[in-house]
Length: 142
Image (cartoon, rainbow, N blue to C red; front, side, top):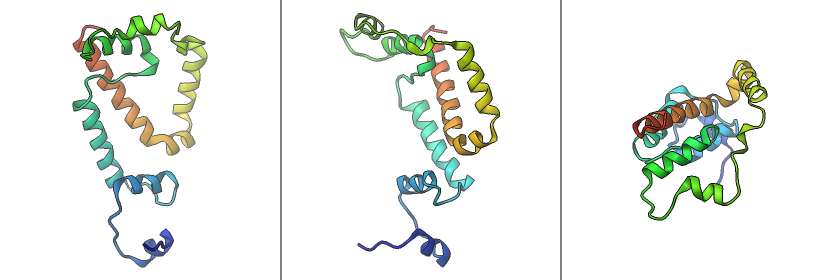
């Protein structure tokens, strides 16, 4: 096996089919600029998996509803997610300072550098929240 610098391949004009995980790694390492066509193709695949293959999608921000959703959807006899979490003496630590957290989220969404860097994460998170809301409503949790 031989390794060549990515610049040599890119500058050669040769089209190389890389594994998807490697293309995403290159994107994250900033070796390859985001190509809308292939990035959205992979995003759609992940969105389809989240929408159709997961019995429950949890959102940390809505942790208590997530636990209730797990209880409603996951067939695990003898397991109660909400009771187990409480019995372990743990609480949802996401309730620290909601106003400060909300302000930080609003500020980060307006920051162009954050949008440029995290656009893929933002799209995926928004889709996951949508799936979570749909699943929670289907089970009467929202």
